[in-house]
Structure formats: structure tokens, C-alpha cells
Length: 423
Image (cartoon, rainbow, N blue to C red):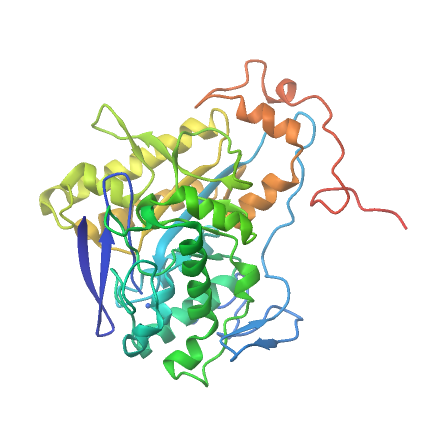
């Protein structure tokens, strides 16, 4: 196991990283931007909504989330859009201000993203014993806790992100990886406990931090939380069983290829994918940590003379995967990252450049996992079955119009994209 150490407004955040198969951790940090396309005060509710506090007021119901497009079924013969999902493990705002940076980048490039919040980033250090991690002593965590300023800054970013149409998922809490009581050894009951605690820390951050006068988060986290990525991509089997029972809709804890997704354990399997790795004979997982391990091993600050090359390799690998899908089978491209400055921040620069190059292109939608799951749910199963038959980079031999020409079955009543029912 490798570890990185960072300081967030005076509090150290240790980010535990596992094998080269999986990424890790994140940190916690500020910008009072409001809803996309409008100047909105931090903490303002969704337009036209009545605010209904939940519990101690840490969260509140403010109506439907703004800036979520209504998903529509593909028309017969219509080529699918190219979806790209950028997601962040252990999302939080610290002195690097990467959360606020990527929110700004998203707005500038018509993108929305998914932020997987680590619950312990909403819990102050002096309240750490409130966390009872499965198979570990109370107050244990591989990534540390937060302080009042860090919690306030993170809440500000979460609030603004949701109002802009971004998704707030979970990266759970203590980020335990490895063979000794890591999440890979957790039972279904253990995962249910971990999920319940992650929700609890979000729903009670006001009380736990003492920031009782701060504006609440404008969503009901019990309803908002529909998906996750497990620490180090471990423990997926039992997590998915727990997630299905708790009403989750997707999981992104696996490793896959650039093909159209299906369901496992009743959840959309939105795994990260293998893409070309420039300068290497093998492909690499679409995650900053994995590119780093393939370049500098578990050293988070390798040879400075190679930082630019390494960032370019990640950028060009992701762009290679994008082009392969965009010009081929149009399978969604799933990308995972961390708010980290590994190898001089070169991977953050790489993500910047990918967002800028792809998100404003024709027929491209840079979306959250929630939006992708909504779109998949709206499609005719027969159409998705055809799409799943396409291999990596495969273009329909007779073109999209012929490949998807057969009129799909009508959407069931109430499914997004179904015709309106006449009274």
C-alpha cells in the first residue's frame, strides 16, 4: 500500500492508495459560484422551490435538482451521443482548491461531473470516535478527518456543485484497503453500516462541526446518493449486494473495456475502462493513480524532468480512448480521478486539457453518472442490446441509420422519453 500526505487548512489528510489496479483517496477546499448560467448566492435553493430542512438542517429538500436534462430515447436510426463521465474519488476542498477549479472548468465547457465525497471529510478530528468503521477500532481511518474550515469549504463546494447539476456520490469513509481488514473482507452488513455512516456524516455536519449557522446542503442525501466507487476498487461483490438492497442505481468500482454497459446485481455497471497508454505496449485504466503507477511507481513525486511527459501520456491516452469510441461504437468513456498534485499536478493538467478538447464537440455530452444512468434507463432494452454487441472501437458495418433502424418498443408509461399521455 502506498500513501500520500497533504495538509488541508491546517489538518493533515492521508490518502491511502492500493495496488496498481486501483486509485485512492482524495482531500478536502472554495468558491462561491452559483448555479450554471446564473449568478446565485451560495446556499440558494433550486429555482422556485420551498426549502424544507432535514434533521438538524445540514441538508434540506429544495425541489428537483437544477440543470438536469430530460433523457430521451434514441429515435430509429439515430446515432448515440458520445457520453464522457469525469468523476472524483474522495472529493473535498483543501488548500489546493481543486474542487472549485474543476467546477469552474465544467461551467466553461458545458460539462457536469460526479464528486464521490468521503464522509469523514464532514467530520471534525475531535469527533472522530463517532465513526465506527467495520472491523476496525472507533475513530480509525486511513485518510484522516477534517477541521471547521475544511468542512465549511467543502460544504460550500458541494452546495454549488449540486446547484450546477453535478452529482454528489460517496467514496465511503475510512478508505481501508489491503488484505488485513480492508474493504475486500467486508460483509454485506459491514457495507450497509459504512454506507449508513457516510450518509449520517453528511446529514449531521452542522451539529458535529458546530457550524450551526451555516447554509445547508440543498438536497436530501438519502435520495441523492445512488452510486459509488469502492476504495481501491476492492470489496465490490458484497458492496453491490448491499447497494442493490439500499436502492442504489449504479456502481463504478470495476475494470472494463470500452463497450456499452449492462447491469450486474441490478445496478448499472459503469466501470472505468482500459485505454491506450502512449509509449507502452499495454493499455491503462482511465484513472490518474494508475497512470502514475505506470510511470513513477508508488512515488507520488517522481523525476520532475518527466512530469510533462507523464501528463501528456495520460492526456493522449484518454484522448485516444475518446477518439476510439467517438469514431467507433460510441460507448460511454468513464474516467476517474483524485484531487491530488501527484508528479507536480501533471494529471490535473491532463484532465483540464481533455475536458477542454472533448466536452464542446458535436454530439458529445460530458455528464455525471446519474445523468448517464437516467439516459440508459430511458432506452429500449433491445436498442441497448444491439449497442452492447459492438466491440471496442467497432463501427456498425452499414452505418448507424441501418444498425438502429428498427422501430424500438414503446417506452412504458412514466419512463423518461415516453410520449406524454393524453387526458
